[in-house]
Image 1 (tube, rainbow, N blue to C red):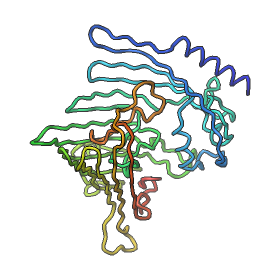
Image 2 (image 1 turned 90 degrees about the horizontal axis):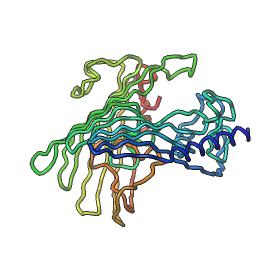
Image 3 (image 1 turned 90 degrees about the vertical axis):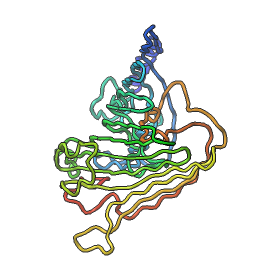
Length: 361
């Protein structure tokens, strides 16, 4: 195993020396290049090892695994005006070495032999790869990256604390009067396999669609959202349509939630924000209906030291996050935040036609 680690490290360092990062800008303002990042990390933790069965890994353990930077990553970067393409291959430690064996290093190895064990480089599974088009009026993203909606640290809908989303997303914001009228659309493939012999329950195909209409002024932003989860069936044009709402009226196998978000900035360095979602509303729930389910968050943000977003090498997948609503994009600097969250019990796990219609199934 030690020889395996040494060979892996030698190969990576050789690549780093040969491919230290090269970029060229042509007279036509076309930027192209490749990059390679190294992020060796030592960690000691008292967290207990998790189960060695793939279907029993807790969500918190998976979050712990994906939030850490990989030992190394390399890829290509292409840019021409508003069009950008990023493709990254990661030298990522096998999930069992991190969670099951509790390896103290993030070196890319595979101590359990869990496939794919390619040259001891663990899962070798890229978490970032996309092409996008971004202007002041219109933006478009296709591929795999993190996505975030809502102004809070932890979104109640599409949260960037998930490893990634395979998606197509588009946003448009048009000036009207003293503000902007905007619309956002996101379609996500949550899982496509349908094999109960592999992972047991919770393996029906699953898709997610998001719609948001918003108005942004100088001091205030307000957005109305719809979250549409489809499971156990394939989506059709009634689902893909960017301007079709509340699908439960004319479709089945769907779990629909609605909500709103806001951001109020009364002072240049101080803001209030919040998010609210509603699944079911009932004055009195019967035996065959779901009770009222809501979720909400509220917070305040104070900018202590102005600053800009970090520039330079990007080690974390969060550096490539697609933010829904341009006002939500982090500004940088040193900020102080206070947030509160309140959610009904089983908000994301309602009585559904099939298990997968639950947002957390």
